[in-house]
Length: 233
Ligand code: PRP
Image (cartoon, rainbow, N blue to C red; front, side, top):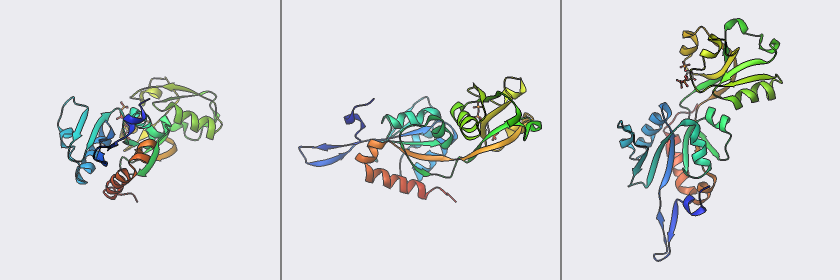
């Protein structure tokens, strides 16, 4: 756990008696969400253009606005934000549901829209409840467990995978999968279909709870500017 001092993004210069702006750190989920988020940060006047260049760099600094941007694996964004290593995070609702971290979810940004679904062979539609110990492969074991066991009262066997989950039913590893469906092209290319929809997903703006207390105005102004540039119906 970081110390309270480290968590502070604004410090007081006692000799001057005025507040000095410290860096606010934003954690971006590597990939498409980071690309979209960078464009919006640039639109609202932040300089994260260096992030657009191909490199292995993971930390980018905007000196003028006293902002740091870090690129992390999507599933790690809530961890960085909960522990205060990042003040702000841009991450998908799927990751928030799976990680269930202690942070503030501020705004639905309306981009990165997709659905969390149970998918499998179309012949299984309407029959899942009749299969004992249904084998469910997923990158999202917590979401899968909550849906089947807590909401539907069905006991399942969860098989955790880290990618290419659609292979599960194709090679007999699982009966179905719980996964993100965006365009549906991965499913259809593999002869699978959506059997049940669990929930809708999109990108969210999240904030560390201590940072929110210490830097409320600055963070809220970023949330406002950022969300004004996104379209949420
Ligand atoms: C995600 C998801 C699906 C696919 C859905 O995988 O797990 O496989 O995208 O998108 P679609 O409906 O537009 O086809 P990702 O591309 O992140 O790769 P992974 O399987 O290696 O995790």
